Figure 1 (cartoon, rainbow, N blue to C red):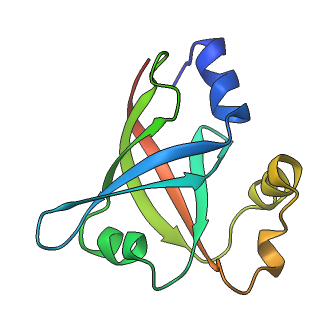
Figure 2: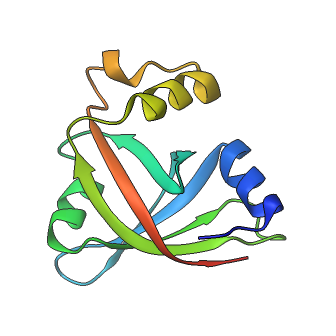
Figure 3: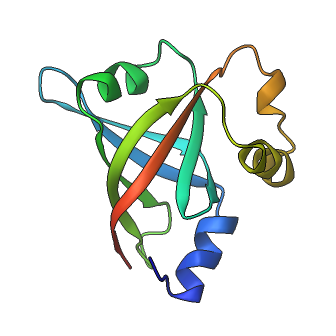
Length: 120
């Protein structure tokens, strides 16, 4: 997927995104969360028993958007929990947030999101 350089830059540098998942009863769940952009995928960390993870096990389709509504970037994709994030993902969380996700006992579940559509 070829991205506009400005979109790629924002995905690498912005601090938060809004993640929308769908509960089993069909209602939406929307939450702001830290993320990293590595190898054209989005990664986030959350608790293993979070609403996000429970929703994704029922329906892997997600929408997300960067916080800046004046220059929107909206992404639709498929999410999946992963047990062993690539080293580049661990390194990027450390660089971007000074956060060692490998040593975190609370936010133990890494979610990988493969974009299917990006609108900017």
